[in-house]
Length: 64
Image (cartoon, rainbow, N blue to C red; front, side, top):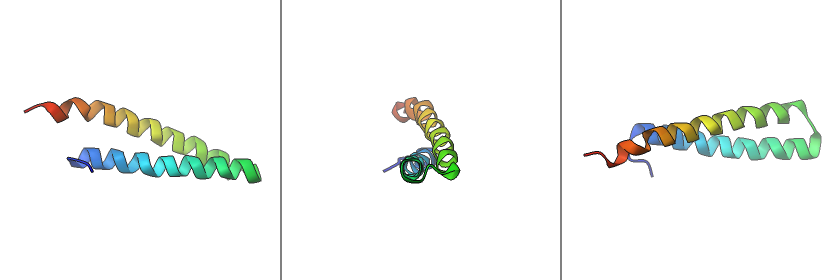
């Protein structure tokens, strides 16, 4: 899936953060727990970090 180590790291972070955001939102919807809010906010930060990282290394793919 990933061509190099950086892409693999950011892709893994994206997938984990996506799942954590979903889990946090479900926790907030059903339990209104503090842990759900913390999980959602933390996962959103990781999601943004991974997207910015993937965007930063994308131009490096096409250089020869």
